[in-house]
Image (cartoon, rainbow, N blue to C red; front, side, top):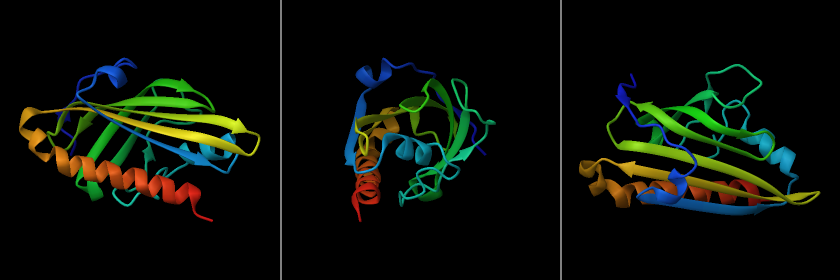
Length: 159
């Protein structure tokens, strides 16, 4: 059960959060193909520490869309609401509640930019504001996020 409420944020949080992680990968696929994968059922299932997104809103998606993501190898369940949705290019969410009291605020931004007709760049930004007690786990969280970005790069750059 996800009983710990988090604070809402907007796009400025990506510039002001105490901790911000940014992963970028150039992908030899057209931007629409990458976008489709990011909004598919089970999105991000290629990341070892994630268990694939479960959309909890009907399609078509937009601002207000919700999803649930099992993270940290299924130990953390994050319920999310999207506050920005630019179809085919960008979407951003903040966490509304989790099952563990780790963060006051948590948000992610996914940006897909066409580089050419058959290639694009994906930038994944994760911004957090952990509770003081959980800041002791910051090195663990950093390793988990680095693993997520490593999985992302491997997924989209492997032949």
